[in-house]
Image (cartoon, rainbow, N blue to C red; front, side, top):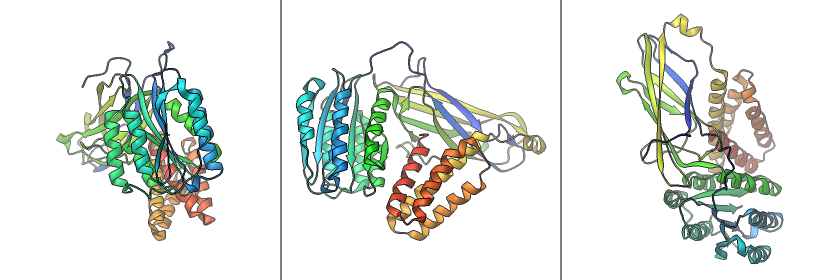
Length: 418
């Protein structure tokens, strides 16, 4: 592990108030912002890609879904450069390596094969992912960005289907440098499985609400992959043990690695990622500056494979009650706290709907509605409130399947600063 050389990310702390109150047991919300450097101004060729397109061709994909998936796959081939590799795997109840890993020079034959894809039977999702990842892993190389792009509209019902076991396999391959992104089409796919695979696979999960949205989402995914600054990103929060300060909550609900550190999404050039932590601070005494916490950011350079570490520390003054009370709250931090709590309620509702617990889902939606109603007017909340109204409308119309996907997708994106 190395300390990064410039240019490197910056870590900034934005507490709800830039101070602590003396003599009071309290909670402190802190926004931790990680900002990678801007993309170098000097034009440089992008890193070669090594990707596998894993496409569901089960019976439910018949019609517009499969036609769109084929068009998008053809468009991906059009964007490949001479140094890129690709493979195409299709699956129903069986897995077919339609195009073994090859270079863009062989795209013409691949286009013919893609146009000929037809629908089949059920959904062997995990075996298909295994085949796609095998195609990618066979050509791992320094300086190459490797990813499996999995598209499905259904439930895994052939081969391994246990979500936890699937996530473990995906995570192990991500550690080797093969990441996974997922695209769920329509309202019948398993969002918990596909989002879990993307989280474990150090990639991204997309909800394709309408077939015509798929092209733009695939394009965004490839742009993000080309703009990647760091992968397997972790953030460790280390409260000051000498003062009894402890980490009470991480409002993003990031998954944790084996060391208990938050797993952040990939870092992309110039694109900030926010994490909000809630600390419990037991009755601090008045002082000029109190060391509150340190954070440890670690990431792997996708081109060199080098692991880097960056540390930063937050110190705050401890002020008398009247002085502290006169300090206004940071509007953006307060709004971000509300946005993440709203995302948590949406995720709770989605899980409850999936489990058939309509009472718990209604409770989660009520909690979300109260958060929206009690939030002060803020430009930072406008998009989130508009998204929640869309979700509410689907619930009120009894469209539970669509509401579940929307709730889960909105929560997923908000937690990842997207």
